[in-house]
Length: 388
Image 1 (spheres, rainbow, N blue to C red):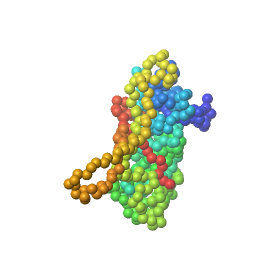
Image 2: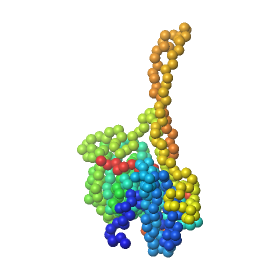
Image 3: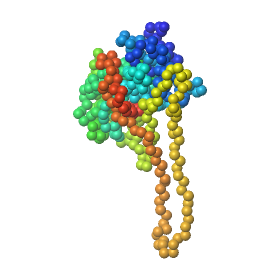
């Protein structure tokens, strides 16, 4: 039994821990625990990992159980590979944003819901559904910290954006784009870093006076909690401005080059970067529990880790030929050489975010689950905090 006020032991013993809810009693899940482990393994399975059920916690709701599981390196490997870890992280972030259900054996477990991440190496970043013109040269960034979890802020996200826009006195043509992150990789534990961008709807760069005005408003409204309601969001802490806002306070004009934290524009003829999206659909169902041995039973062919080696640049062999007698000398002038270009075709591109619609349950104690028949999209990977 864990001591009150102390984190569960499994948070110390495992690097990747997540949970979800299912409408089945603990006794039933205990009898089918190997099947449950294999279902989760099929959802995120790689050769280098194994899935372990860490806890089956009965809830106050009738026949509802919280399933806590860990993802560990397989016995043959000392650690989970960086590629596998990156894809697991993308899958978890997608499930949190869209509240999609894991593909469990429906005849046994029904539909899972309320997926949450308790621990993830490198932290976790969640981008709630919102729209803005992101391809701007001048990026206006600022960060602050709230002593609430990502899950709690998601419940009041629209209210957060509305109050923050009002507190910063943003113009109608200025949009606010927000990213939520937790350095320990938890969506249920505080604090949360709120990474904010002020973007122009028309995509133009703001004037120097407007940048200075925004910087003064952000720093000056710190004592006013950035316009956020104390009773809902608590006290705003650790407000940090990006370098362009800091420079504007001293009268330095913004540069047109891309600021640190913003994605640079691709050079001409540069190869398109390869993007890997998490596979959220599995193609095989597990066999009955009697024929399995934990995660060692791999149905079909497990997901291979992608080979990310770049394509080799083609070589051009020199070729000499005789010059026809009637060719004008000017035709023999050397022509500029063009470097051969190698293009990498992207595997897939992220689809737009989806709001918490059609989900379960309706109360504010937990977000709703999405219709299991709906085909999920992939959330874009988020960048690291952008303020220096």
